Image (tube, rainbow, N blue to C red; front, side, top):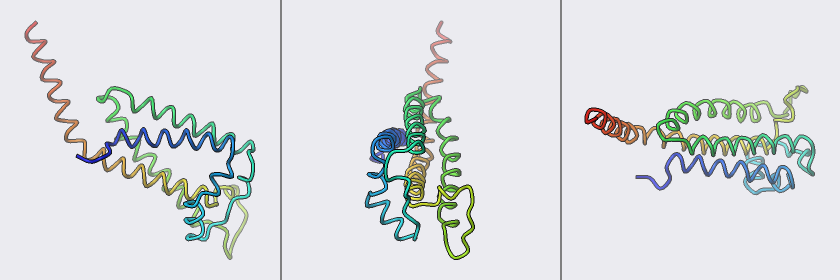
Length: 171
């Protein structure tokens, strides 16, 4: 058995989202100045965002979104295993697809030699790239764990249904 289960990884991601929400609301510069954000941004030659210098309406909106995501994920992972397991088995690939697209967009369409202004320019910075890259990594890890735990879950579900069926037959 692995050190972290899929549900523990999801709980960790939920707490990460709520922590990011706090920093987005109070001190967004602390996120932009993180070593990992700087390292990934420099390695990929992605520009540093200027909007994270102080709290703004955009960072407050991002904080609300991240807090909602964190709380809703904590509630979803706390459901009964019979409901939570199929939910996350379908939810994680959807998130991965979205996050991979966002991360790819922030990298491949970064300002370069043939730069033309577009509405998505605010997504082309190292904070968005680092967040998307980290999220893709963690959600992929959770997806791998869900796939590995699928057989154990199926065995527990079959055993539970057998017990329920024997109880019903005895009545």
